[in-house]
Length: 357
Image 1 (cartoon, helix red, strand yellow):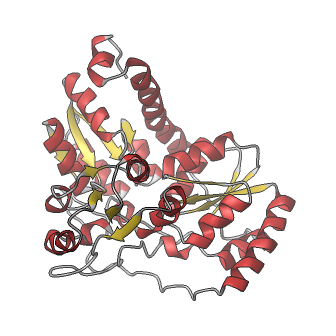
Image 2 (cartoon, rainbow, N blue to C red; image 1 turned 135 degrees about the vertical axis):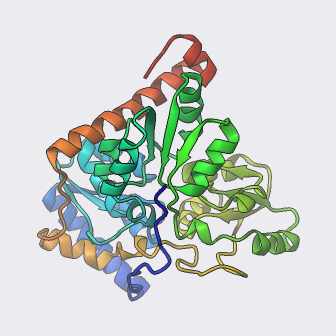
């Protein structure tokens, strides 16, 4: 099993903060340039507030990585600006090969992607040819092309449950915590890659328990990329969009949330009357590589978005066509599975109906 050393990652410097007047001026100029270029911004939940606000004000989209790519595919704009990290730009290109996909900074990485290099992962898969390969969306196009199935955190449990019913042995990559969570929930036979997200890996149970004592009535919502002892404390564990929806649904005033604090922008919009408390990304044993906000997501800035609109050179995402076609197969299986699961109502009903994906 490949266990990447992510302890000495070279993290980007924090961008200089902008004043409210600067944000307004950049937003106005960018809006005009987007219209001139027939371009639209799709932003991830973990980007800065002003970037998410730009996407909203200019007719763009805010969401999780796959939803971003699907929305961009269905939009009429010829140019898609992906405010996120590199694998998200690649996913957008996989689904929209005819469009120009631009990113503010092509060096905006992801520790899960970096922790699962395609060559090493391919060798591991070759050593276990009798296993179905399932990879998380937070991977490169090349890793997706090597996989049989791609999953998001919102549907990973169902996909693994389905494959288990089909009698499949599974290779899972790359997140060790999400893989462990799924394995414990489903009992599936899984060989698990051992990468991690530097944001979620730094949530610590001891510090979370102390915060819970300070807020005894708060509901605890956790992304399952977090360590198992953190997830075990949760009232709910799920994807970023599922956490957003849970805050809307749950009858509580206070919420302790263990995921990137970028999501607080959309939750605050949807639930202005609720109190959102970031889970401690620190305490004993923590490195605070991220301080609960992905450093690469912070590379998406308004100045860089304006710069790429003025001069796109050095900002465009390219994916080898053979890799793109291979990755599209595994992504389409996910999309097909999601559609059929909704129609069937449950994994068991889908399997009982004889559906095999």
